[in-house]
Each structure stands twice: as structure tokens, then as C-alpha cells.
Length: 265
Image (tube, rainbow, N blue to C red; front, side):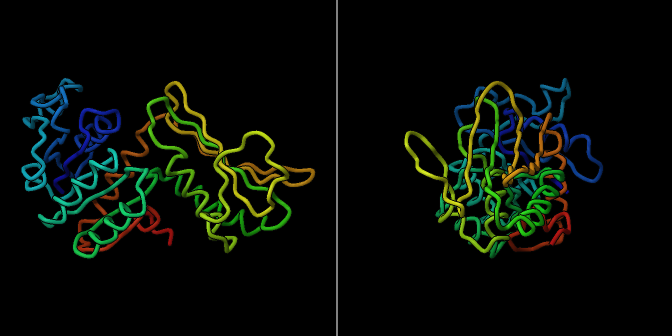
């Protein structure tokens, strides 16, 4: 499978390029960056000391034409431009970008009617196993426990709470028969009054080079259950994204997530 990488000079982009280059059965087909990137023209493998023969470019159509699938972990505005090109050229896309609004999510759903799309807030196998554990825990601890989601990421992350934290909240809310939009609490300050027993709270930490830490606390009377996932490397995300791209090989169209890729549904 021929895979192109968006955001090629970023931290995640470089990890994805390295993973594709080191994975049997896939080849690097292109490296995409925005038009103002200082990395334009550099070989995609320069940071590894390797010559891939593929210069980093802002030519979306050229990159997409050469690839079977694009992996995109950038920002919503860029991803939507790439999504449009993928749809227009009939190419598959794996999206790990977070922070989409309702219109952005609808654009992904619309594209999935004609191309294969894997869209997930987190591509780590461990995180997706955690989602399953949270579903079970929420059902068992449905009464008498207050639920809080605590997440921490590096200082450069631009959206909060993280997409993974929001997915955790959605998994729990669905298990409890609630709508997250109706029960989520994202900020507390001043005189807040007693905690609403039906709420799901979120707390966000940003600092340093934290790759990604997530903990869900089920706080009862006399006991507390915590389910945590901590990332020390982006490698697990890159491995999962490449796995997702390969999953799409025989999928002409449709919207999928990592639970589909891992056969957990």
C-alpha cells in the first residue's frame, strides 16, 4: 500500500514517516506540508539521515495522486482541505486530527459515503482497550460513583480537552444512557455549589513534553477506582495509524474507527 503523510515535518508526521519506512507491505508515497513550511523541498527522510527521493511538498493533488491513502494528524482546517482532495481523487484517508466542530465531523461523514475513512481520537491499541474497559466499568459503577476525566499533554497541544478524553467521556455517557453534551462539566471556578451526581467532569493539564496521560476516576464513598493510560512515545499512535491504513485497503467507502480496525465491535 502506498501511504502519504500530512504534516510531514511535525513530531507526529516524522514518527509516521519513520514507521511507514520501517513497515513491511507499505511504501512512502509522499510527504505533505503547508505552503509556508520551512521544510518544503527537503527530503522526507532527512531527519533520519535517509534519502527517500521524496521531497516535502505543499502540492496536495500531486501527493494524493501518488498515494493509496493519506494519514493526517494535523489541524482541522488543514485536514478538511486534504479530505476534499482525497474525496475528489478517490483516495482513502486516516484522520487522527482532533478538535473538529460539528461541521467538520459532518464533512468526514459525508466523505465516507464515497471513500474509505478511519477517524479516531486515538490510534493506540492500548487506549482503545481502555475504551472497552471504561464501558464495562461505567455499567458496573452506574450509581453511587462520581466520574472525572483527567488528561495531560505537552505545551504545544492546541485543543482541550483532548480528543481522547472526550471519547472516554462519550464511551462512559453512552454506557450510562446519557448524552455527553448534556452532562459534561469542563470548568470549575468560584462558588460552584454541590456536584451534580449525573455530571462527567473534565480536567486539563498542559505542560512540558507530556505525550499523553489520561485517567478516569470513579469516586465513590469509601473507595475510588481509577483507570489510566499513559503514553511515553508517539510510536503506538503511528503503529495504529499505519494499521488503520492497511485496514482500508479493501474498503471502497465507509466510516470506521479503531474499534473497527482492531475488531473490538
